[in-house]
Length: 548
Image (cartoon, rainbow, N blue to C red):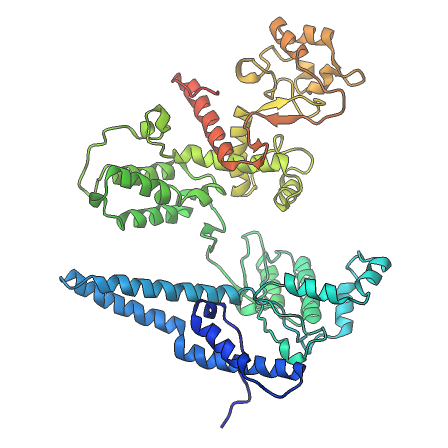
């Protein structure tokens, strides 16, 4: 009994790495047949596909099963080598496995690049599409449409074919035979961020239903879950659950290895991070590595693991110290309960090598520097989705520098505000129109101690802006007013600050986060850490890193 379904032919890019593929194709195309040119092309493509399929089964087989078989064989050879056997077959098998893994990676890379098929879902009807098309603004004018629908030339066809990627196929809506154009697609849509209000949920459901009717795709409810906050009543939960028809998740889940919710016990929320680092350290034999080897491993792996988490959340200082304890114990060769002498303090090892240290990260300060990067983005990148969402939610009527921390704010927002403190302590305002800079609260005075005004604030003008000191018509400083407000030496510095003749916004400078060639995050993090370290050392009366 024959099955009515025939698996479609797919050319595998991994075949091109084997000479047998070229030989098989050439053998098919060299055969002479008495047919018209268009029929001959279709026939030879069909025969070529069948020949490649037969050759692939003989030469390649199942790549995944072959990798598993080779790995089992490698395990046996390794055990024999440990017992005194010949270790040379290990290298040969490992090379064969690497080649198979490379072929498998090529195969899956090609799978991920397959585009839409020519088949349109039978459930899709023109009236369903109108619901979507009606709300899409028209951007193609009549002139543009006439140009696009104009009869194409032979030169345009040639250029289009030459520009086509090697693994792509022409669309079946052209003049080529239908047998040349086949492709398949599988999409897995998911519901993101289900709403916690009944009316919003019903509106979301209506949008999803419209999308399903227009596209012919359906939401996979088996892979969709709901999580309700404590403020959502039981009745609303039941209505939403029944409307969406998905399961409810009660426990906290992780997304991209980060906790979805962070409660009051923040150390417990990030305990998994310490556990991951501990497992990495346990897998290394410290006694077999030199200090240089341990240093490289710790910097490249152990200290790199928390980077993504620290760029999103402010870790508890106790957790940072516990992770650093694991790192320095491994560095000094301490194993389990066997204690080793730590010849140099950890704080000294965290200094740059140019200052006698080893260049290890101070996790607590690195955490602040990474979070400060987000504050800098919110200050300068006003077109990103990140800025638009946080602007609407947390500081709709002011800038990030004036935003307040609310009691019900998310832990992510509170973490970003910790990064803002680094910016405030290290950056200096460059005066434009003066509308964004507070006279007594912000850092804007060049060359002064802390770059802040130390003259006593006038009670009536305690929250005054620098713009009140500028004559906006002549674009000059109000000399008499400045002399009456500030100490003489401060007044002289202010009056010597150059003002632009045209209208310019105030700019926060001093962290060198932008270079002539664009963004430089490594330079930003380095400067942010330097400023934070300098501020702490000054407060503690210790030598500080010069800002040169």
